[in-house]
Amino acid sequence: LQYIVTMNVVQTSRPTKLGRGYVSDSPKANAVEFYDDIPNCELSLDDFEVFALARLKVLRKIEELKVRNISGESYRTQLEATIKANLGDANIDITSHFILRAAYCRSEELRRWFLTQENYLFKHRLEFQQESALQAVLKKINLDKVPNAKKNALRESLMSIPGVTPGEFASTPYYAIPFTQALDLVQNRSCFVANGLAYVPLPKVVSILSAKFRTSLSRSLVMASAAFNHVEEEGRIAPLLKTMNSHYTGNKNYTEQTGVDGEVTAANIDSLADASMPLCMSQLHAGLKRDHKLKHWGRLQYGLFLKGAGMSMEESLVFFQREFSKIMTSDQFHKNYAYNIRHMYGKEGKRASYTPYNCKKVIMGQAPQGGDHHGCPFRHYDEQHLSSLLQKMSVGTPMDRGEILRLKKGNNFQLACLKHFEINHPSAQSVPGIDLDNVGNHPNAWFSASMSYHNLKDAKSSDVAATEEMELKVAAAVSPEKMQE
Image (cartoon, rainbow, N blue to C red; front, side, top):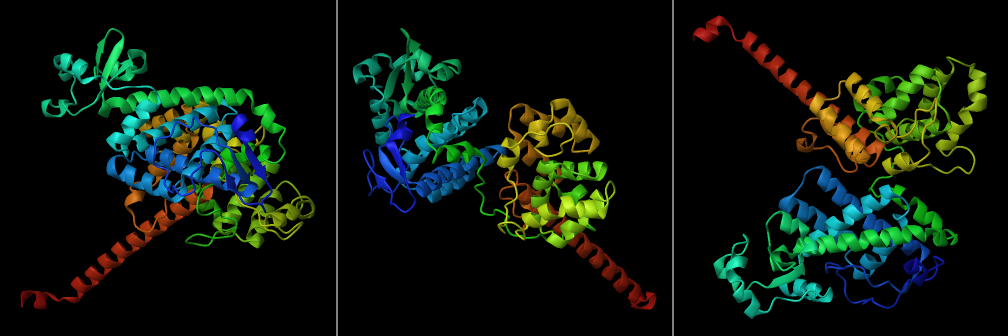
């Protein structure tokens, strides 16, 4: 991977030095970039990670907006705000693309995800270009305008294509492109084809550029995958690249016990599991109640989740001991398992406070084996098992469950989880006071949003009941004589 080699990653104490192709006084990164030029720069190890995570936030925002079916001005506004906050510098934009290209080249699933989100980002940026800037991009990839004489000779044929009015024809540039590069437009009859060339007006060139960008990036990802073993020899950056896709990019990491509206205890956790836990955690809870034990990865995933949800260490010890003691003595529990729980809370060992698993870590982590209950049901259950489980839990309608299964089949596991939340919490987006950020990205965000939803719903029901009771009391206080008066 030549571009990783030309990025000289240094110790964190040394500042980043930007080399060929970087202009320090160009703060914006809205230009259309094909990322053909390999960056030549020196990065600190900290900046290597920070730059990559900045771009990852943008790509995950695109994924989130798409799954929520947000489009139009709302889509553009939200995405542009995220781009400005994270990729507002051209240096970061270019460097971060190449870092993530290396991180996401390792498997077909990762390549497909990265390619899809980058293509959406590319299309978004095209829409913000001035006509002159767009023509410069076309010239850069050797697509020249049709001469005016040729355009006027083809006027009748070109005007048969919708999109350009007679009044706009004279000022609209057209481009002659090999029709194989404009198959989408040919299929939709959105261009004129003659002698193997597709004549395309400038406003419709976005489709051409997008296809070209996607083809180029796809080829680069495959080449990078074949050469990734050379990067693995670099002991400093290989671990960062291998775990980049599982990094959590939300504002909250739930390392500390943030809690939710309502204390999480050993006494109420059963009811909370039924009402407010995402499927991965409710399955861990069900497995624990059924088997009265969890294996290592299950204890770690569920124990850290409960910690992030607000369960204290003392309550956690009570909860797990209550279940484990059904198949072992209390002494055995304290000898073999209590230390690990205290360790998760930073009370043993090196006394570090461990972070609950985010969705990427659950999905890409250790796959469950026989007798395990950890992992992501949308990722690790087969279609029949997942379908039976959703039906058993009475999740939505058959159509709702079919949509979840469709997302699972398309490897959109987090989107399937988000869909599960939306089905179980109707109109949650319209309820003020619910933080829906990172639902589908972190189990604790899912749980916290669900708890807020139910608490607000219960509070509203209580207010309605109180109002009705007051009206009845007022009506009863008014005597028939007063009524007659």
